[in-house]
Length: 382
Ligand code: SAH
Ligand code: SF4
Image 1 (spheres, rainbow, N blue to C red):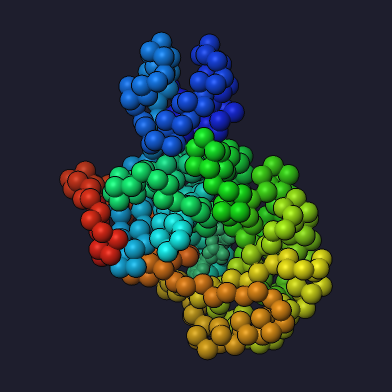
Image 2 (tube, rainbow, N blue to C red):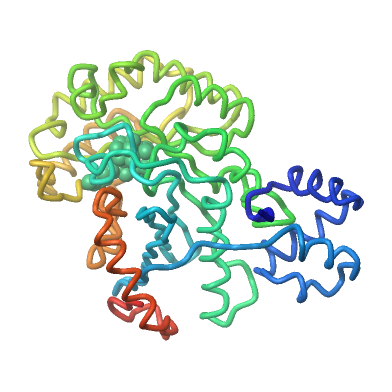
């Protein structure tokens, strides 16, 4: 079997070139062709020596993921469903804003953490994505958007690992993928524009701090262990005190940064003023001086099996006010892509529903991808 070059970070690609009897610097050229120009055939890599191209033809390939469907929301958000074989599918979402373009990508098919308010968690775990499958989501989205917008400059400025899966439970595949995203010869994202979101896998937060201290978002969702263990089962293993201590250790490796705490607002479950006051105590207790954390309140996106409801808007505002009056920087997340189910926790690869993926694949074979004409087109599907 030949190697898929999307699996490699620059160091991995340099080793691969060495194994072919080539100089390491060839890897940089190759890396640029693949990630900066979106090339997938060696024939178009015109400044590579013909002898190298011939070696690559027999030993390597560049293969992204098949797109099962594409939806474009009225607010410009685009959601792609990718086939990752074996009946599994994962999603990525592009969110255009005035001064940036954010891509939200998946790290696993399904998720083993099983949070009560998350539809991915309700589906269960299918498998870890490989490095190449994580990178392929960005590779596809960036070059697709450039072609369809007719632009030659970078479109995706921020990446958040907030799609399906718990990235820190797939650490060995995640790390090279993050390195590709940060590499100046590839996507050149700055460390602060690449966010890993975790439900709190404490040992891996420490590893990430050492290996690649990108921006960290921690899904907190509750101010005490009893409630958090009920919502995020992983809390039984890594309770709040340990989690917040790990956050502080993380910041020692990421000076002048802050942790973003995500807090999904669930009606009458975790949205009362007593919960906000408990959060204030927690933040003060763990403060090392200055702003060390921010809160992002996420209106819950309901789905039937959860049995949970979205908090009233006034309740969210009141909750935010308690936090901000206590000096804690707090934002309320705008929901984007509502009309295409692209919002947090609604990403549904249907890992257990193989027939549905198969059906979509069958449809895909008969209908060609229509070009995206503009961002405000509704419900574009393949
Ligand atoms: N597994 C990681 C990253 C993926 S989930 C994590 O849990 O952090 C990304 C974010 O979406 C998390 O903050 C998660 O709590 C939130 N989320 C999940 N389901 C949601 C839902 N139904 N409504 C709103 N936010 C949700
Ligand atoms: Fe997994 Fe994150 Fe969903 Fe929890 S919220 S089940 S950790 S994807």
